[in-house]
Image (tube, rainbow, N blue to C red):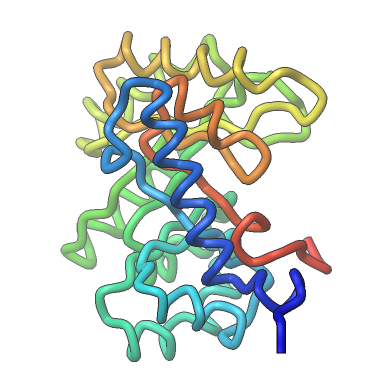
Length: 230
């Protein structure tokens, strides 16, 4: 029986398509696709939806909420122990201990209290995570992230006072603005701060992000399909 588009458009197939698009975008930008890490954002999806992507060999995933990740990922990681898990959503101070236990990277360090708590907890657990500072490039009051004018001082505080090894910067552009402007701004900040990591670009704009130097793209719906919940 011939497959319909719905039947063939599985998460594994969509993963393959996203990888091809990353490779093409990297070529177009004169970059090596191996320098772009694909974070498959599996928030709101349960194990049956995630397993096909793991079985296809993809081992880097992102989650937005500590409690959701804690509920579903220990069992998945038991089956796929080489999996790396990144927290790509905001972190509350009362979840820092669990976040450091469960995740391999945190992408949304955005205030002194959280940075201090992460530093203390990593010391306590003798564990080092990959850390990104979130910059609110659009200066949106409802969105997390340090303001652009405070980014340099905040990164300096993390490095000098807390001795955190900051891997890079992260941003989420405003939905009604051209993302390229925000990706260019984040890349400029990273260059000025001698940071290599740029966590930017999601399902709708990751190819543009790659053009501006993204090292980590956070892709959810283009792999897993549309979410029914936030």
